[in-house]
Length: 277
Image (cartoon, rainbow, N blue to C red; front, side, top):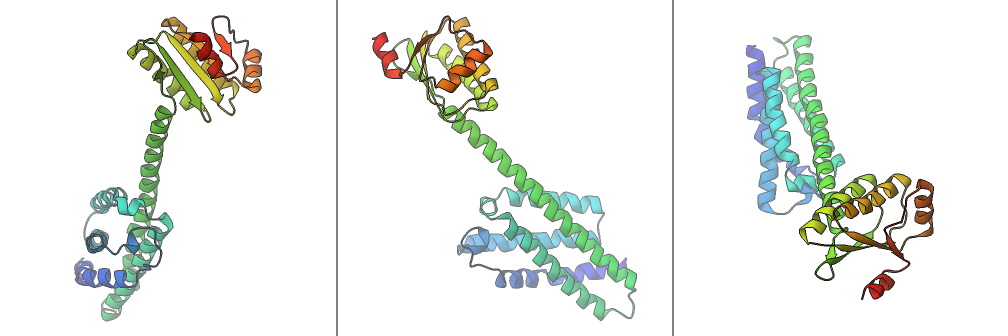
């Protein structure tokens, strides 16, 4: 235990040196990401994050593993949410984890060589195994959290895009237009249904034009949801006019047995509006 404490103290005494040497040898030529920054504050922040990682990793030698993992988890959550790291390719970050681990091995070897008369081979191997364990776990956690963060960001962006791409545009006091553009999947179709009903009620719409000329393709499930929207609008007192229906969509509707009984249909949106006015 005393020997382990000595190794911890030795590594911590070298931690600042490790950080400075790590940064000096860093590949700064790639223009993307945090490692190529020339901003002095960003550089100091990056060094601080690196030094903090050393502090946590070396605690594996003197603390319970569960406590060290909690500290590491906090470091990873903070780092992966850092905008500068978010914009850095994940392969560059993993490369730096591995490079840092190799630096640790070098200093552990220095300590082992200096104390080889009192140190067993088993003890030396144990130290290497601990460092491998904490750095490997950090790589796995970092990759997982990075993917989770990016997926959450993509999900949010998709929701924003879906909301912006299906606006109910008011044309007159009780008349509005819903232009649908782009690919419609099941998620977007559900959001379209919810948003359109909410907006029609909020804006007092009684007549809605739905233009499908910007929809390139649509499968049977999405077609069912679209025409479910028309039925839902009818239930809240909104009459609909469809325009721009492509032949393949018309065929899908017929195959599904969808009725156009209470729906006005025109080939073009301009015709629908002209007929209205």
